Image (cartoon, rainbow, N blue to C red; front, side, top):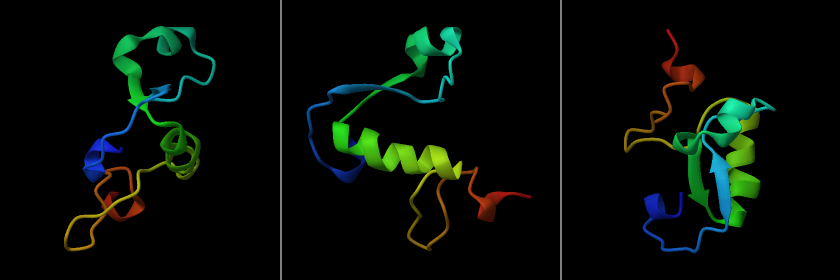
Length: 73
């Protein structure tokens, strides 16, 4: 998330891209891990998981995440 903003930050948290919700297979799947800084893990990522879609838009203002309600058929 920092890199997407052009920032270089030390990652201190291993985040699960897809929330594991107790599923041990997902918890230990290294392909499901991503490094995050603590502020992004504890705020931005948590909001996205709660909402069910990612935050952000393109230059025209359209949401980037295909799971955003705007992008649903």
